[in-house]
Amino acid sequence: MNTIIIFLFLSFCFMHLVFPQCPFNFRKLDLPSTSVGPSGIAFDSLGRGPYTGISDGRIVKYNTSNFIQVYITSPQRSSAVCDGTNNPAILGPICGRPKGVDFYYKENLLYITDAYKGFLVGGKKRLAKPLATGAEGVPFKYPVGINVDQLTGDVYFTDSSSVFQLSQMTQAVLVNDATGRLLKYNPKTKQISVLLRGIGGAAGVAISSDRSFVLVTEYIAKRIIKFWLRGPMAFKSQVILKLQGRPDNIKKTPTGDSFWVAVNTMSPGGLTIPMAIKINGNGDVLHTLPLDCYYFNTTIGEFNQRGSHFYVGSLEADFVGLLN
Image (cartoon, rainbow, N blue to C red; front, side, top):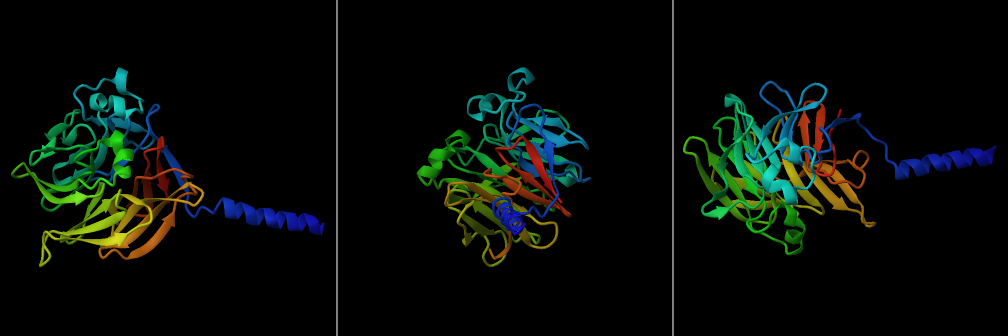
């Protein structure tokens, strides 16, 4: 009898070491057909969504029980060729590959970064309108993160590299590419300006509540940069946090100047450990939330909070994760 009790106790301890307790309820919002990689998560002014870009070139919206198509980014895209595909390296130029999405609520416009089609905006038509494919004479190679200033309508977005495309990111990491840029689109003048160059894998961008600065994640350099928009430090930048893992998208929390960053690290055994890190505007880490309980050995690209709900995007998953 004692032997059985000891065995059960050791088994219980082993299970909790190998399979950690999951503190949230977890639900999968399945993507349509065989598509994968929900990239970028946004909600409209009425709180509907999430909206996200997927591997086959569509931007889809979760409509109470399933995802429906709302926008495409490529005029060459056809459902017969593209729907359900997962090979952006070959079909990206034809189908498009939307990466970042964010609404300008006042005009109900969805701004989009597409890895192959550049910077676009979705309005009343199914085909999003292209706004730019480059800036200051340098073509976009891999547009990624995006965030809209709800007061002015200005759009801040990133181009991960001026040399390497989405399909070449492994090479970009190997050579420590640092040709990424932070850009700003002015909807009044229709002009795009380059705010910051020399970024090591520019990924996510998030505006502070008082609009005095933006934070930019460096996927390759494993850092977070603060770029001041106003005040005595205007148009200057500073590294505020260095990380062990690679940061991807960054999103402001619903209240206060804190931000959720999706970060992926490698364990000593070579497994991917995805986590969400909450930081303030000075780069202080406020909270760390491991997500390997829900995404075992799987990278995540975004961790987006809406009230008490958390939405997770992953280039490797065929669903949007919902935690509450």
